[in-house]
Image (cartoon, rainbow, N blue to C red; front, top):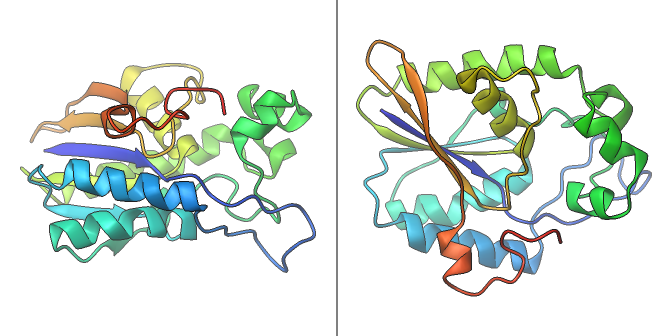
Length: 208
């Protein structure tokens, strides 16, 4: 079977103190367009199942794809992001550009300083969740719309990397993992962006 690990599209920024409870942003206008481009691109593939994180930015990204495929998406809390309970959502791209301490905390694995949880504990919850999705769909192609942290820690596990956060998945990028019936896993692609590059999204592959 094949897992398509898809990062959500561009979400709205929510500063601390702007909402009661955890921040759960939807998509910007550009994010909604990215999700539509993703759906049009992947509609040609024989995708059997669409799974989404319960967070709004993932659900709104998954919705056009599910409609294009005629599939009802399955919501799986196991692929929520590490900072799902944070009271703010500042795009990681903004933190990186500003050299914000929260950016350094994220890449250095100090996720509790950036509104998250311990990266190894997070990985220990994500890996079984994605393995269960794979085991439940033998021979199928499953699109999982989730988050950059989820994709990082799972691919790091498959590749045997010590660093849980090791690359930057772009918005609506797809990374693929092949899973044999015996459970062996291999990464077949990382950060596919043809649907954005081919339609001239200037943010694709950039630092914005």
